[in-house]
Amino acid sequence: MIRAISCDLDGTLLDRGAHIRPASARALLNLSMQGIMVILASGRSYRTVVSIQKKLGVRGPIVAHNGAYGYDTALRQEWHRRAVPAQRARELVDWADHNAVMMRCYLGVDQPVLFNHFDLAHQLCWLRPEDRVVPDLARSLDADPLELYLTGLETVDKLTDAFGFRDTDYEFTILPHVGYREVNICAPGVDKVEALEQLVKLWGIRPHEILAIGDGLNDVEMLQWAGVSVAVGDGHALARQAADFVTTSGHPEPVLEGLAWAFPHYTLSAPAKSV
Image 1 (cartoon, rainbow, N blue to C red):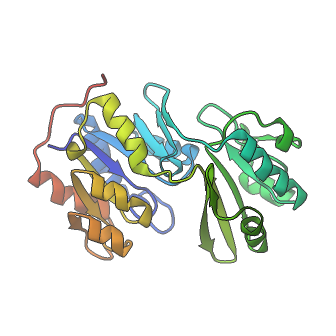
Image 2 (cartoon, one colour):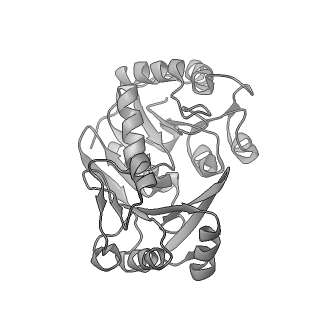
Image 3 (spheres, rainbow, N blue to C red):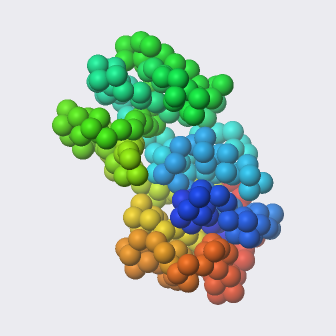
């Protein structure tokens, strides 16, 4: 029986333009209204995941920062957190200050995103009303950030030369783009499964009652862990190998196709109840 769906965002529920696939969104909303828990699980920040959840019309648990953070928008409760220690975060921000690099720190829902500084170009694109620029952030930061984030080209090489890719209290994930790279700095070894395991304990759901849908390398463990799994046909080869079902390559609505495959094979259950 499927009692919950854990769905990745980029490349899965979102298309290449980062737009929500409409038919898949309607299907997830319909299942949510039937009592199936819909969990958005992403490497993106909590505020991006919450924003997409609102657009779906769904409330409840989210998994953000690739598993470093779990929050329930219905209960307004944080249920999982594994962060970078404040002392290490201050060292990273101090490095950014000395290299004139903008760095942002995510602390959690209902808290502002903190920046060490802002130039006008970034301010027009990134700064939200709830954000805060803290010029002495390298000294004043006293909370453990879920994630620190920066972008650049040579800057990224300088950062890795200064700190290395990982240590006992942090890990860099470097994502290449056209003309720049971005660096996500989280606690070492965070994974979506880590957060989901905490969630199933809270809600009395067993892993074999979860349908996982994803496309990326960071979805592989989730696809292996869940009782039922669907990989996007255009996704990473290891994700496809880990899944029970692979959607048609090029399908405009892979989540919808995956749901259409899964639910005829597995009986719907009663709504999940918190314990």
